[in-house]
Image: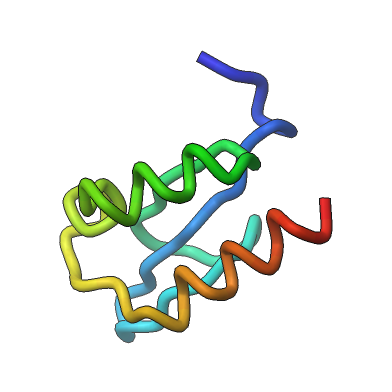
Length: 70
């Protein structure tokens, strides 16, 4: 368990859009803001299971950029 500010929210909206957004409506998953969590989520396909949809490589690249910026 982590505090909400320590997590990134990845959402999948009804229209099929997937993004890193705190305000986007739809099914959401939270990922901690460190590289280890990012690698584990990508390798184990945790986001795919949580969001119940395939996650494009571009989303993982955006997540990696967001982690680097922190």
